[in-house]
Image (tube, rainbow, N blue to C red; front, side, top):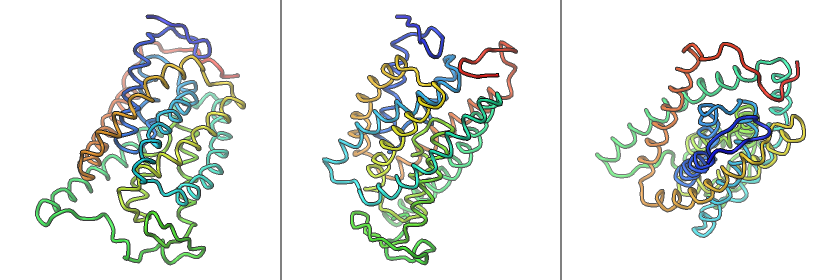
Length: 307
């Protein structure tokens, strides 16, 4: 069933969009990521202009993340205090990111910058996650399950001022690095149309030392509110949110997130991180290939760009 998207100004198959939303929702519930790092490149691949894909992709992340949060609330695996501090930093970062996005759009460079950001960040993070996860899995087979970081081990996050007790995570650390992680995720969310889970989940585990069992739910909690704010900012400042596209993606995303949460509970933490790393690297490889291959059309008109 073909459908016309008024803001994106393209015709696509409605079932394809619902299917993409379902796949991303599955990833959201399974890995604790909003899924924007996957849905935005997939929208590129089916012909959605990057500016529209970024802004509308953030809208879909809201639905899939919220659906995942509801499932984690039942298991009591959400650290609300950590989530609110991450969100505070994220709102500041997102505001700055939207301003930068609009500036790049006026210069006509937003498509290139968005794709380069995806290649660089996904490549680095995917490689590091895969290397660490394989090493952790190898060690766990020899000496049993291991934790990424002991919660009583003191690192740099314990030496900074403004310490806060995060009871659900069993941590007593400075709020400053938590705010910094949230701000970094906010900037990326605005520029790349992502929830930022592929940055935040590794940071929460390896930098902040959070136990894996509360990382996914807390990440989805922060992503839900941050993505909603980012979508609103894009809609108001650049009119790049396609409501019809968003609705179709949301329908699939909400359903997929429930299946992902159920499946994730059956897999070990090391296995989940390896699967996420492989997925990140696969998307990175496809985007990098597209940057080097000669396009079918040497010239194109992108809706919403003012010359």
